[in-house]
Length: 171
Image 1 (cartoon, one colour):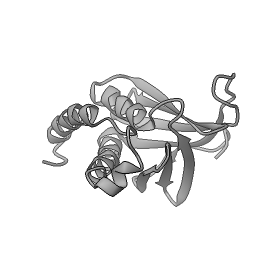
Image 2 (cartoon, helix red, strand yellow; image 1 turned 180 degrees about the horizontal axis):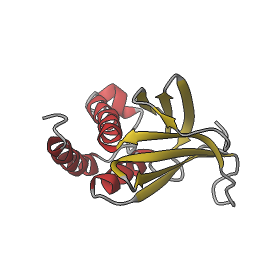
Image 3 (spheres, helix red, strand yellow; image 1 turned 135 degrees about the vertical axis):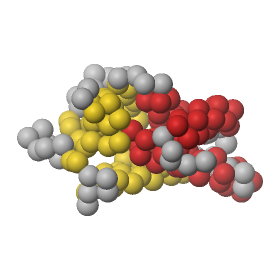
Image 4 (cartoon, helix red, strand yellow; image 1 turned 90 degrees about the vertical axis):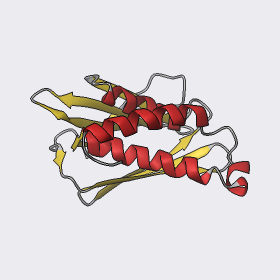
C-alpha cells in the first residue's frame, strides 16, 4: 500500500507471530485479503517485549504508541494512534525501511488500517500466549532460550485479561 491509498476499514484481521530458533521471529498480518510479513531479528531488541509494551500502552488509554522490529538490514515500524472521535478504535500504520540498525531510517508506508482496540489487543495477546505455552516444551524452548520474558508475560497477561473482561471479550 502506498501513501495515495485509503485506510483499510475491515474486521477481517488476523496475525501470526512466530518465534523461530536462533534469535529470529517472523510476523504475518492478514487484513481484508491483503497480507504483510516481516522477518525480525532479536539482536537489537526483543520483538515480543516491544509488542507487549505497545499493547499495554493501548489498554492504559495512551493516545498513541509505536515500536520497531529490525531485520538485518531493514525492518518495519508500527504506529498505533487512537481515533479521536472513535476512541475504541485505532489507526495502525506499518512502515518498511531498508536501512541498517543505528542508521537514519527512511520509512515507507506499507499498509494502514483501522481496528477496534479490543480486537487488536486480543490478537496480540493470543499470539504471545501461544508462544508462552510452546516454551513449556523443552525441545522447543532449548532452541529459543532467552527470547521470551516469562515474568513480563505474567504481568502482561493479568493486565490484558482485566482489560478484556471489562470489554466483555473473554474470561
